[in-house]
Every structure is written in structure tokens, then in C-alpha cells.
Length: 370
Image 1 (cartoon, rainbow, N blue to C red):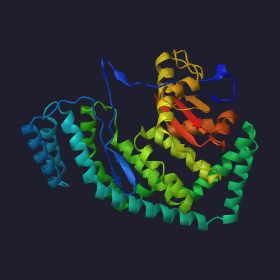
Image 2 (tube, rainbow, N blue to C red):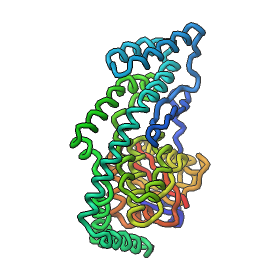
Image 3 (tube, rainbow, N blue to C red):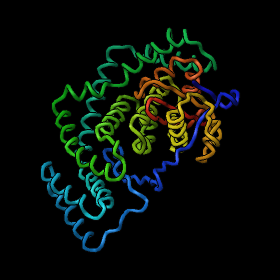
Image 4 (cartoon, helix red, strand yellow):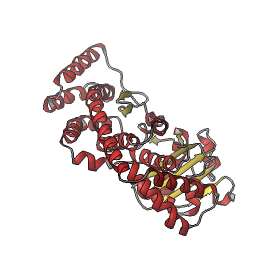
């Protein structure tokens, strides 16, 4: 379902998730480190972790240095991680260890990003040698012209817009998984990086993020690298501006945003800037739909009836909204919205400049702002 702020009030939706658990309110503190032009999400901490005494702090510093020195010895790192996470209530130590892991991953991620980016650029260059540039320019121009009409029907989307976008994507966006599985060097890079996944996951669980998945974060990282590697410099730079924020949200939500922005760029439309407040409002509405078992732009939750109310709770204006139910896959959600005329218009509206996407289970919300 979709709506914009020009639609009827009864068609609206969404809410803000305070993220409360029992009596405690969780505060997310992301420890981020530059990694090959991207950022790796590292730490989630509780608002009031148990403080360490002087002896515990000194022991923690020593063990963190030992963890660093262990280097590529994964078994030794696990042993040291056990000792680190046993200090105090484990939360301060877990946050510190996540910072150490992030730092240790800097060099391997830099190498991985550089090699993956070069291979993606080569793959796109080969694609472009097999098709006339004028043909791709015409596809992009025709796609943009279709969006500028302000209205589009399902038949036109399937007959014209979708085939054009599919062809543009095949030309300009390499398949990350295909590149990695087909290249021994990249496979070794990925295997080396994944050796940190166990300790990373244990730290996240200690900090209340039991569902955090390092593998999904790495897939997002790979997707961000590959999806802009084959684009012209200006388009690549515009997409790169979003990456720091994308790596602080759920990987699926981030992929949904990036996927839409790739389509907008390929179609000659400016990409949307991710807004974490819009994401928060969208995530809350998706969570409400899941928990209260409804699917609508109009919420039964007090204070969250309309998309404007939901945005207002987090201090942001919402001018358009799409919702979807039925899959946890961000690409499935985007494809469904793409094929639906009203949702399609919201996705490619040139007057929109900011976006936030939120998922809860199989429920998705896409928020837009002019």
C-alpha cells in the first residue's frame, strides 16, 4: 500500500518505536571505524553499564592488547575473548572488545573492498563493451520521462519500466556473490574476515543485540562496494554519502534504501538521502503492524494514527509512505512496490529528497520527505 500527503487522511500510517524492554530503556551507541571508505557497525551498549574498578580496567586493557597480538590466530582470540567477557557484568568489556575487533578488521576490510571494487569495475566495463552506450542512455532517458508524467499504470510498468531497469542494472551493477565465489583471492578475504564473526556476535549478544548477524553486515558491505563500483564518478559519490548512515541500521533496511537509490540513479533521478528519523518512524510502524496485526496506513495505536503523527513523534515530516507485507527480503519488497503504480510513483518522485525504511518481520514501511 502507498500514500502521499496529498491523499485522504484515512489512508495514512505509522509510529515511533521507543525500544523499551521491561523497565530498562536501551540506548544504542554505535562505535564506527572507517574501513575502506565505508563504516563498520561495531558496538551497542546499555545506557547504564556496570562500571569497572581500577584492577578490572587494567586487566581489560591487557587482554585487549593480547587480543590484538593474537592476530590471525582465531582459536587464541576466542580464548582471550572468553576472559574479556567475564570481566564485570561483561557489557563494558563487550563494547571495548567490539572496538578492538573493528580496529583489527580495518586492514582486511580495506584490502577486501579494494579488490572487490576493482573486480566489479572490470565486470561492468566488460558489460558495457557488449552494449551500445546510446542504447543505455535511451533506456535511462525513457525511464525518467515515464516518471515525469506523474501517473503510470501497471501494464506500462511491466512492459516498459521494468525491462528497462532490469537491463540497466545488468549493465552497471555487478553481482557481488558471483564475483566473490568465482575468485579465490576474494574468497580468502571473506573467510578471513568471517573469522571475527563469532566474537563479534558474542559481544553483540552481551549488549542485548542477540539477533545481530555479522554475515548480514558483511553482505551489506559487499553490496555497497559493488553497487557503486561500476557507476560514473558523480553517481558513485552521491551514493557514497549515504553509506555511513546505512551501516548503522538493519542490513535489510539498508539494502532496501540502496536498491532504490541505484534504480533512481540509473533512471536519471537524484538519489535519496537516508534520514535516520524517517527510518525510526518507518520501523515503528512496521513493528506496530506486526504486533497489533493490522496492515494499513492508518494505525490503531494512539498518537500514531497517521504518517504525520508518527513522523512528528520523532521530529520529522513525512510526505509519502509505502507499506508492504509478505517477505523479509528487501528486494522482494522493492520489486512489489516497483510494480504497483501508486508505490512506484512514490519511489521515483523527483520532489522527494529523503528516505527512511523500517522492517519488522515481514512488514515493511518506506517513508519519504520532500
